[in-house]
Image (cartoon, rainbow, N blue to C red):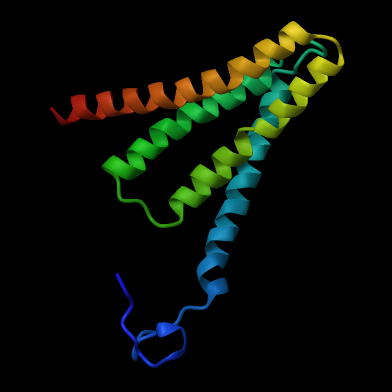
Length: 154
């Protein structure tokens, strides 16, 4: 498909206002930052509530990542199949809160630390279990959300 020639810079048509990039993106950046801070604070609270033992399997990070992935599975079903959400809901909650809550960078650091400490079997188990459990959590949560929503509509 081709864009019609307008004779104007950038192919803009007459009467179509050009929106400034920062005016469009500033609210998105703001809600992602606000949500990210909220999610990171929740993750920090989880680490205080359930501290990881040095050299052991990092259950807190594992649990946070799996729980966050399950929540995103439900969230995506709700905002794509049930509810027409405001344009800032997805960046706030999906990218911000859940992005700040889950911590795959800590997963990488924990894995490296386990290997560096000579805890290779634990490191390998963690390396394999985290993405497998996280992806399974997304899939199961989305499946369960669809089943519940279908049951409620009957």
